[in-house]
Length: 484
Image (spheres, one colour):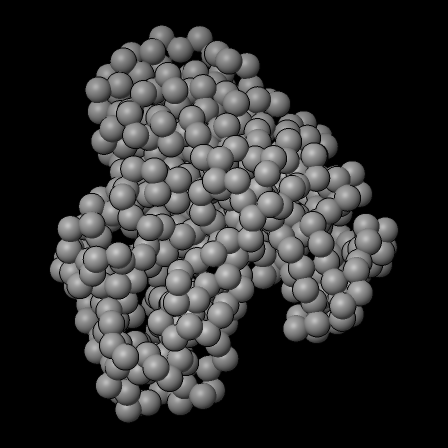
């Protein structure tokens, strides 16, 4: 069989290599067309060389193209994947540094909290441009597979306003399940589970190890006994004890989605672990990404060397995309966890929310498991975030800065730290700082700039409570600014 798959943001070299290598592991896809597109021609050329080499070495009839013309890449495609980060590291730096001035200490800032909300404002207009291209030039009925954060907001906008069937994909569920298997001493293949909620706040509500149901107390004991996770996952273990279920998300991610663990600087160190950024370091992902911003330059020869190896030496990963496409094209059923509009799938979350929950894929498409009810504490936590997401999408669609301020005000962590006046000024500063990526706020920027000039809210020059002393916020800004 032959069809076209397009990857937008293909300059994410390593991830694109993974996605396409996974697809090429499916025998029926040997003669597909893979269209790569990115706004960075240098990265695009590198990934094109890598994929073309994989195809050539394995004597496959597949066709590989690369172009900076996104619309041309999408033309005739049956499946379109997005891996984009609008604004790159320059915008990301302000997602972290501006809220810090108001006391909001984020580890990642790409899904919720002030940083995640602004990330959504930048991404949603671009996601809708992708959808317009898909409607107009892709194969009729084309499926949009979104890997870009903020997952729920992007997928919400695409499904509600983009006119394209969009499925949000994330690997947090698989990663958390791997942890659970490790602490229980079983292989990943011996662990069965139902995980449900919203992206990055998904909960393992039923766990079976070798067919045996695992209860709360056993899981707590297993995590507390683990020599590594007991130190790295303090927030997740604490939430497990209080909620009765384990969360998919890393310690650092989860700590910034909730209002309890990062609101007092003197308390943060009790809950995070500095052995790696993902366990709660202030601005950890920004530091990691900035310091490795050119890693693909040094690793490019290694990628080319790996591309010269036969595909039978590539282990297919747990990323959902290749399995979804395989199921839709061949009928081989795939069970995974997917981000889609709720519509009653989870009984105690709003219908319009983008939820992450189990589903099955076959030739008939995606079929979600309906009638799941979350534990009340999980539903309450998800509902708070859903309200923020709903307002954020509305603000992104309308360019209503007042709605954007209300969204940030209602964010759980921001609300635990900031007064309304602080939120209003912080959002003005974020919008002014990121104006070049926020076309929908063009008319709101001059007034926001005037308010900032008269600003009465005092801010702090603060690096955060859990900063690894490698680079300061200012140095990060200089590094990022020097490359754009």
